[in-house]
Amino acid sequence: MTTTALTAVVLAALFPLPAGAQPSEPVGPSEGLARYWELSGDAERANGKLLAAQEEVQRTRAALAMATENSSRAAETADRARAAASASAESERQAVLARDRLQAEVDVFVEATHLGLRLDLVGAMLSSRDPVEFLGTASLLDSIAEDVAGTVQRHVVAASAAHEAATRAAVDSRNAEEAGKSAAEGAAEAQRAVDAAAAAEAVAAADVIALGARADAARRALAGLTDAERAALADPGPRIDVADLALPDGPAGDAVRFALRQVGKEYEWGGVGPLEYDCSGLTMMAYRWAGVTIPRVSEQQVSAGTPVALDDVRAGDLVVYRPDAGHVAMAIDGTWAVHAATEGEPIKVARIAAIGPINSIRRIID
Image (tube, rainbow, N blue to C red; front, side, top):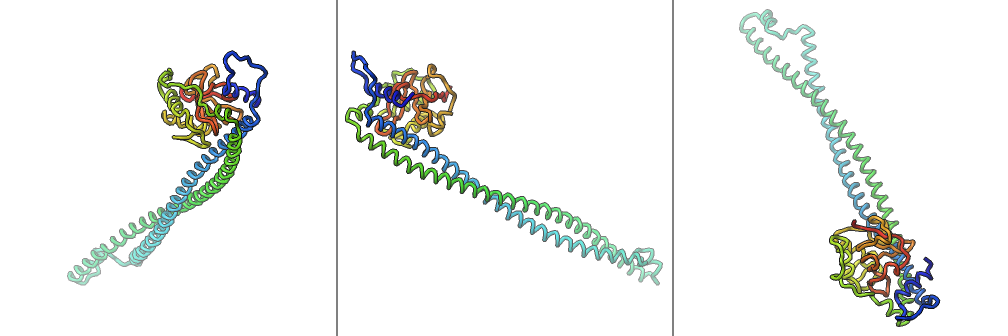
């Protein structure tokens, strides 16, 4: 549908002909009204970009926080691993020294035996001159034997400890290397998150400026309309008593009830209530009140749920308008919808077909 045709449809909804009057050639909107709708559409698109950019800022800040936390944890792990590796290396060094010292003592006993030193009772008896000398020698041999056995046992334990310490040192060294690598990767991830956050914030800042400029232009155009045009825009549409509607039980019906309770409240770019809403803020908050989460902006809501045909529209369906998916309303039934139109217009009820060219209809809850 062309802009001219669209505005003619909307005008017909805003300014119906008196009863019995015959339409002549289609009468377009005034230049001021057409300009107002054009600027309002520009502002709405800028608002969508701004909200998307702000969501991106939130995501990148969350990623930054997570990356920073991961980097900090990895650095702490790396420090602990390096300390453990250092301690294990020192334990290995001490164990090796103890093993080598005991090895030297064992070597002395082995060398003495190899040279013919008889460290046994038979040799002591044969070499003793009398029983007293034999008993003294036997006692000395027992003591030496105990020392030899103890030294050998300590050597075995020290050798085992040295081996275990060497194994621990190798494991701790690998752990320290891996932890250091993880810490470096975490730091790089954190830096990427910082860069992404900075870029997203720059986009959001630019979009804030763009929205402000377009919103101001739309407000100036609104101020230039005639009293009759502003009065027509301020009309919230037909009064609907929720109690008279056969709304379904469950989230879809609850969302419609919430949206209808907001009729008459003001429009605000970026508004999510409780006093002011923009179009997607109204639909998002309506479903949030009903216990269902949907995306924030209409450009995202156009992909939510499942698509349905126009002749299958029912309460709670989201009707997304325009090729750029820049506007969204909530169906009350197959004919009417409630929506936050734009600056200068309250939240209102309007015919689904009169709001604009339909892009897609999405059913959030089957």
